[in-house]
Image 1 (cartoon, one colour):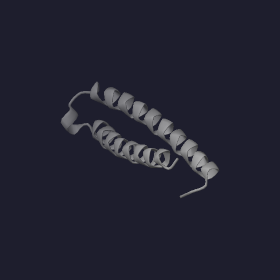
Image 2 (cartoon, one colour; image 1 turned 90 degrees about the vertical axis):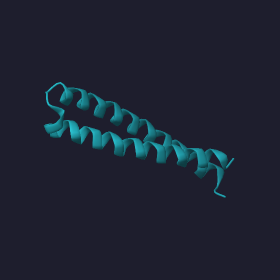
Image 3 (spheres, one colour; image 1 turned 60 degrees about the vertical axis):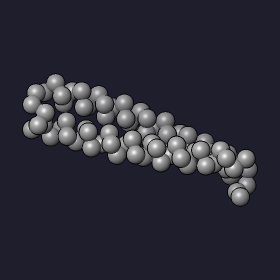
Image 4 (cartoon, helix red, strand yellow; image 1 turned 180 degrees about the vertical axis):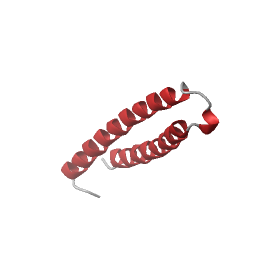
Length: 75
């Protein structure tokens, strides 16, 4: 069990990280949309990269949400 103050600091840090990741995901979706407007998606490297980036970002968001949930349980 961690100290209450330390837990609160960690919780704030991870909540901030979650906000950053969610903003990053929004930017990735914008890039994906812009790339999609460029034409043939099967040969569009920017579109493929945006999909990969969004997948990676979503996984990271889920990891951070789990960390937050675990920290919130430690009250």
